[in-house]
Amino acid sequence: MDALTQHAALDALAAHFNGMPPVAGMHPHILDWQHGKLRVQAPLAANINDKGCAFGGSLVSLMTIACWGLVSLELAQAQLHADIFVADSRVRYLKPVFETIVVEAVFDDAGEHAQLAATLRRQGRAGIRLHAKTILAEGGVAATFVGRYVAIGKT
Image (cartoon, rainbow, N blue to C red; front, side, top):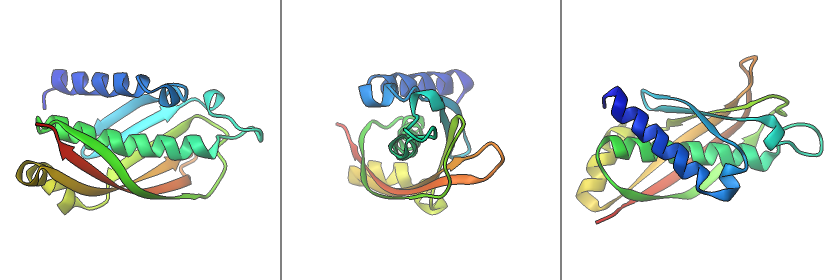
């Protein structure tokens, strides 16, 4: 994918995020997408809880949409259109976040990632596992997420 097409795909994803009021309220910002990894951040001020740290619901929501966004971008890169759904997920909260929330999403299995587009083309639907983590500025991990997503091709 050339830089112009990648930029357009990222703009479309950002517009999609901002089109969903609960997501827009978190003020997500896409930092980077390359080599099967998507990084998203959101300001603490828009996601703060009564303890002065990031709301757990915001952490899981950002990890969920980062994984969803990664699947969406990868399919767009393959020129495929699909409805993407989270089928199931598991989250672990490890440390509180008192700073800008930074989330990194990646594919769980390189083989599944490599076959995603081909499976969707062949079967009209594809499932894939992803994982995400909330990364602290000092390098630690505040939360982890594992999710299974399903893409159903649009005709």
